[in-house]
Image (cartoon, rainbow, N blue to C red; front, top):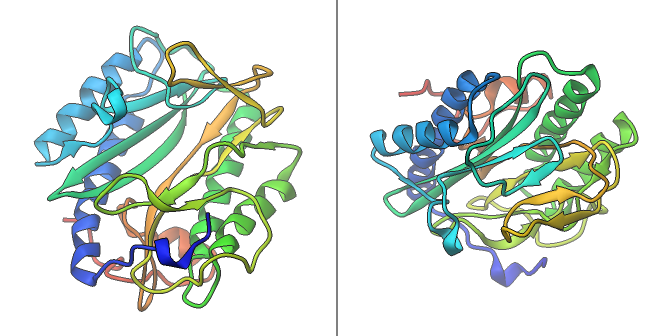
Length: 277
């Protein structure tokens, strides 16, 4: 899983193309976040996503991927990842994760958000908050000279420090570029200081998945939807990040990660300081 030879380093011009795809994803997810409400179906969200992605001159990367039938993944409550949009109507108190990908000029962006539906139990809001903060700890660990497992360890350390949450092991982050999934795998737990050394040009998707109960999962009969075995609620968030000469640049965050990185005491790399558009 951690092989130096399998890393695909990108040139600055290629990372800029990935930023274009990342902005499409980030803007689409913000539109979806605003659309989440009781009474909305997951199919409604999928239609909105495809419309926004195509209107931006991009192509939905999920649609048709290994036969996947939709433009986004919508995973509700005990669904961890890969939930297929359809007739399910969102209800007050649900927690939904939305995973979205787009392709611009052959380059991919990939990100996910977890969104409360109306008024949600505090413990579910806390689950989502912990997952989000763990993501940013992982992104902040993408530093020149570090090791790939530093990212995994940063995610795990934050989650473990916040409570007794399950960290899903069977599904991980990944390299990304001209394909949505490329080497290396990026697990959400592990010891620091292992794996390939991080260097400028690396682009990966970091995506913690945590649960209120056991980390164990099953796949439903649709061969896509991953659910928690014990029925516990799950949260899933994701960003695509590039390591540039000046530090990590979150390609799917509208501000490049500047605000969250500032909270963590680091500077955003690349062109992340530039305004959107």
